[in-house]
Length: 132
Image (cartoon, rainbow, N blue to C red; front, side, top):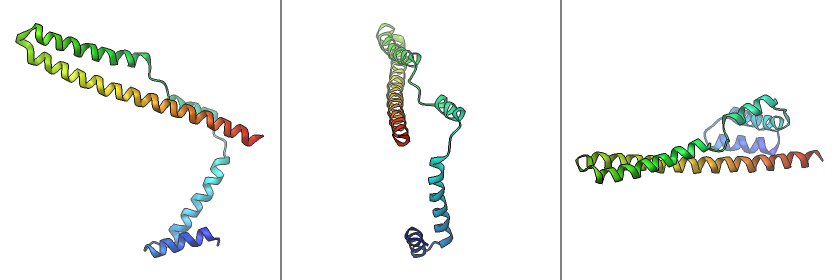
C-alpha cells in the first residue's frame, strides 16, 4: 500500500467513513490515467462538437436587434396613441427586458465559444508536442 492509499484511508477513518470508499477512490484515480491514453472515436468527437461550441448565428443577432427595435417602436407608440399609453409602455418594457437578456446570452455564448476554441488549439499543441 503506497502513501496515497494510506492517506486516503486515514482521512476517511478519521472522518467516520470506511476504508472501502478510499479504495474505490484509488481505483477511479488509476482509471483516470488509463482514460487519458484511450482513443476516442472520431464520430463521437464530431457529434459532441455539433452539440455545442458554435458561434451565435447571425439570425440570433438579428432577432436581438428586432427586440430592441420593437421596444423603441412601442415606446413611441405609447405617446402617439394616448388611449393605449400603458399597454404600449408595458410592451416596450417587456421587449426591452427581453432584448437585454438576449444580449447577455449572446455575449455568454461568444465567450464560451472563444474559450472552447482556445482550449482546442492548446490541446492540439499539447498532443503534437507529446508525440515529438
